Length: 481
Image 1 (cartoon, helix red, strand yellow):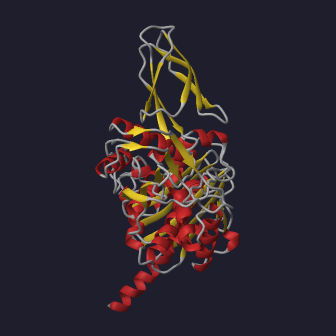
Image 2: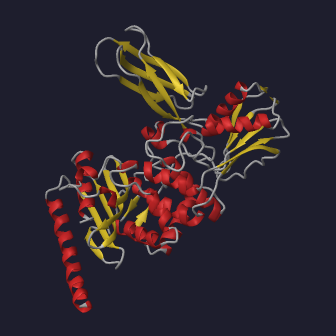
Image 3: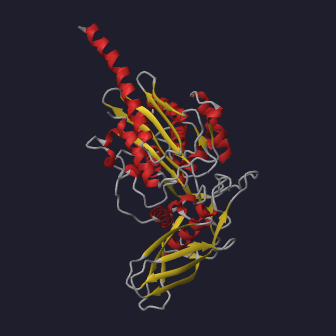
């Protein structure tokens, strides 16, 4: 009887693989990506066999699928319980120095990740440090409030990030002193009467950017048309356009150009509100990659420790946070190579990828987030990494990082619509999206094969992104049958 069952399983497994091939091929023939560049690789994690392969050795723009490699590297090199520390130092010079330690979590985010968590005070970490300073007896500061991000050299923008990237939250500058994801939000309110300039407020409400407001309130029911730009070499924003008199408030998110200075301004404001007399002003302290850091001497009067690394990585993968991924790359470099630079991080990534069997010609990268248009990776390299991480001692932590189909993160509204009654939660995967790239890679729990690793990378399509995403989702859902 046992031999009969074994024989049946041996016959059924190739049949199941053939059915999968036919199903994906059928989707390809009727797809909106007929002229696109498509790479797909599906791997059986039990046997290591490739169940489907299409252009799996070619290189594709991965978009945010690059975060899979960065997150895996950080988890393996630093461990799930790794912590970051931010310090407040009272220097003999009279300065009060906020010393960044690479912590991405100085914000109002909830840790661990919570779906639909309500927004909290964006500056609560700064407020806590200010409270600690008061408890330590700080009543006056005879020097400056210094934002110090020398922990990593000041190199805020990786290559091939565009000017449009850099003004918004996707391309917020990388700094070892990061507060509120290095962004500020503008709320644009219509004025009381048509013909008047709109009212603009900031959140967090600290003085950082000066605004040249050219937004006119207009009568009628037309949609708001708002544009903004940052004046090069200054902390001035130009905001122009129109907003309807009876229309809703318009919100725009803008990256701050100097995160260390922004953090110093936030602390300066928090201390003033607590009655501290400050003789100096907010200033930033950076260092170039070829400079040694200035020594930070004095008494540590306040400190904040981050949540565990696994909670930070969960935010990176679930909501696809670019800045946090870049910080992870630099922290891995600092710990393993003694230099918290993008270049050293990519060298360590290359060393690790070679160790797990990914060849040098199967990938290239210029950043850790996938925002660079010069990143490339093959579908086979992605599934090789996914296979390795599934078997790692950090495997359970790793799996918890990924968005769940139809449930949370960037997959909260995906896969469920393509499921035809199938359980979208059987897919855990990382999304990716750029102008010419739609990607999805992760795991699918197959009814016939168990857990599969898969990578679907689509580049250079002419259809809409929505059409391509829907098609990619159908392939992912096919894997669970």
